[in-house]
Length: 554
Image (tube, rainbow, N blue to C red):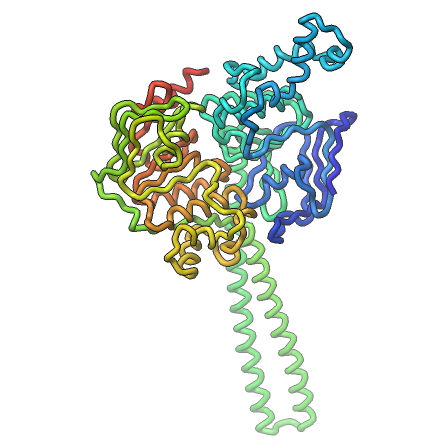
């Protein structure tokens, strides 16, 4: 079982011993995992479904292991992957300083009861520390009395991080902390990570963040391999390992071919001996008893010879299998959806004098024609998600028009298009009721859901697997979507999954609007038009201008 400790008599650390855990459907995640995290910043990476978020939850005590122990020396601070805050909470409540502030204000007003002094303790500068922590994360404009319902998703993430930093825990666990953060907010978070002096374990697909860690912990097949330095150093070391692994495969393949040839040659030699023995017996050149003894000796010798070569072949095959296991094979999503194609020039979407909820707007007329690929960018809270939800028909505009002229599908940040109680196959069937189960399975195989994976319950999927299932459900829907709206699609995806997504979208022939803060990903999509959304409305821009805009905020 897990036994976290808050003792500070020893240096802060995390020790996982013989850790075992399985998901609800019985799938084993860990079976005897051993890992130790000491002082410094550790980047925890691995393919989606390898158990990164699960490991953080086990360390944080959010879930209990089936076996083994988790021991933590020091106080833990944990930022989960999906941050949800009660919209009625005030900023001071999230920061955990409401009681101390109330006591301070009471003392300042002349109320000198002992309970107020007890509440304050030695924390007389709590408001100044809170303001400095918020400012350090770019939240200096947020007052302590504001409610969280007024904050954007990115601001909510930073506010939760501010609460942790204000607590000054010995051990800090961060699960995809850059999700929903614009470039400016990400740089603030990078700065906070760089000055962290305790134990930090961060799960992320953000290369810039992973370049700032001291070591990389690669979680794969239920074990952890360690690499010194940031992500670039990890990639170099992994490339060297893979080259060596591929050489070992070639050597093992050559050895197997050699052993097979020697086995075949041995069979030829034994066959010749057998024919010679038979010839001698037929000619009766030696006494029968002598020939019988020679025959038995030859059979025993032949058997030993054959077994020896068969064992060598088996050993060579085992060495090949072991060498092949070390070579990584990242599957790619394959999508062939001709019905999604949009002819050039065809009107896809029209926005006219649109006034969004929460203040966003689109002045004049905006029109999307043909298979354009649009990057929708802007700072946190600018209204990108609100605009996409309005176009998708999930929100009513305060005024104006948002008219789609083709079938569209919207993939939201939270991936709530899936029913957690249903399997992957059943979820896709909801969107394509006319398709047969075999047709659905064949299509899902292109999204890497093969065999038993297709019958897993949606609730048991990892972040990346859930994304692939949601993307499959939307792209395989009937009618086929000719306009696809994606809101922060790379959230929770490891780098292999981002490459898979890029490959899938490369073959999508419809119109595309993607809201994202990941410029590297957007540029990989072959964006044809960049749109910036802010208080001044929607305007054309470029990747260079976006970077410059964010740099101006430093």
